Length: 209
Length: 209
DNA sequence: AGACATTTGTGAAATTCGACACAATCATAT
DNA sequence: ATATGATTGTGTCGAATTTCACAAATGTCT
Ligand SMILES: NC(=O)c1ccc[n+]([C@@H]2O[C@H](COP(=O)([O-])OP(=O)(O)OC[C@H]3O[C@@H](n4cnc5c(N)ncnc54)[C@H](O)[C@@H]3O)[C@@H](O)[C@H]2O)c1
Ligand SMILES: NC(=O)c1ccc[n+]([C@@H]2O[C@H](COP(=O)([O-])OP(=O)(O)OC[C@H]3O[C@@H](n4cnc5c(N)ncnc54)[C@H](O)[C@@H]3O)[C@@H](O)[C@H]2O)c1
Image (cartoon, rainbow over all chains, first blue to last red):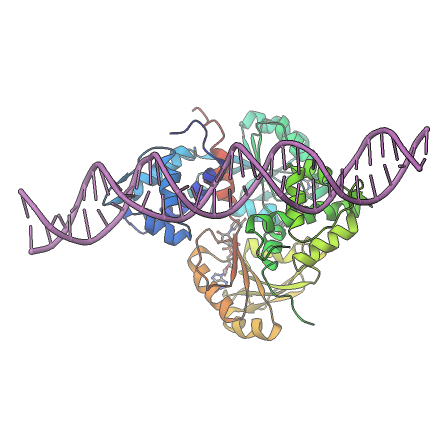
């Protein structure tokens, strides 16, 4: 039970939770740090140490009760509630995100979509109307949306991020491949496939041509 | 010039490269570890240390020549060549990936798309025909594709990954939210927005209802 | 009941990583 | 020519992180 748990530990918890979700789906009752470790490709000691920051969840000689540990992790990560999200940018990626069926059972749902393109505004995706960016700040506030997925072009990303913060958003997951600046206390994460790819090509032998 | 550079260092290099690409676009000639550090939100010493693993690229009192450093990073990361990629799974996400215009100028391009759905096979995305998964292994080999983007449902992910490896693919970027097992030497990375979101909600105050 | 096999939680050791601080170097101005 | 200001590359150290290893606890088997 630490005062402050290292971010690197927090970043692993969702992976533990993901593995546990799968086990619950398969009606698996018990697991162990070793089983989790093998599945995730890390050491069992690390898993035990990580969990020990938050309490004692296992039983010696037995391991962990899967549904119990899952609930504990959900509670720790504040995903024992359903979080409403906004998607900004109703382009190719925005469409995929709004239609994505993988959010709901993992504690998130898209409740609003915004764009600037007049041709797109008013259209609907998955039964949800695309709203104008001009009403975004106000809508975010009234809907009390705290999380946004940013799927706009690079040139608009910082501006939109500023508006999101103005609308009361507290966490932004940006798909735009550019560094964004947000006030202290606002959570920010990036998803950039090219960054992931370029880390892998380092280890690949270049193609001889 | 180390024998083996820590993976954590390698993972930062693409971020440096991304920042440098932006500077090149703005015709900026010179930069410094300090400027890069501010932009990326890390310390300047870290950037210098990271780069020092590979050589001396800067000039004291001046900093780094932007185009030169960019080229060096490209060379280090093996992205001074264009890598061909396959996309597997022509669903919502697969479509967005195939249409994505952000790969080309960052050293990647999608050259093949595979799916199992008979309704989708034969259709084309962005001028590229969706091919049957039954010919995938063979096609990967003849096209000498070494990188794949995995955008299939969870239940198919491990099976498709096995096929990719059989086809000679050496690096897989999986969007399926499940752990995949690959042989030693095969690069594997994941993109899971929910994992990113759940790390952020840890820091958010739960909504009171 | 007692022996045995497991597995947790955690101090301690080992390792990895990042921050600091500064000599060396370069450009520029006077 | 010299002084000045800026910035790199790196040795050193402290902090952060991971691994080790084991006592304690639990369930099972005979
Ligand atoms: N498509 C992909 O697979 C993919 C992959 C990785 C990253 N990305 C990134 O995600 C972002 C979106 O990609 P995309 O392929 O969907 O692009 P896109 O061009 O298809 O869509 C962008 C959308 O954003 C809207 N937009 C522009 N300015 C806006 C603003 N100020 N406010 C609200 N909406 C605005 C546009 O009208 C458009 O509908 C880009 O930054 C891209 O680099 C995309
Ligand atoms: N859509 C998103 O924004 C999003 C976001 C994050 C992660 N994901 C993940 O990406 C994957 C794809 O998501 P999606 O929304 O595009 O789903 P989707 O259902 O729209 O598309 C999946 C496609 O994969 C094809 N497929 C199924 N089995 C296959 C096989 N064995 N070989 C080849 N193709 C096969 C299907 O025919 C379908 O076209 C899923 O694992 C999903 O969890 C999607």
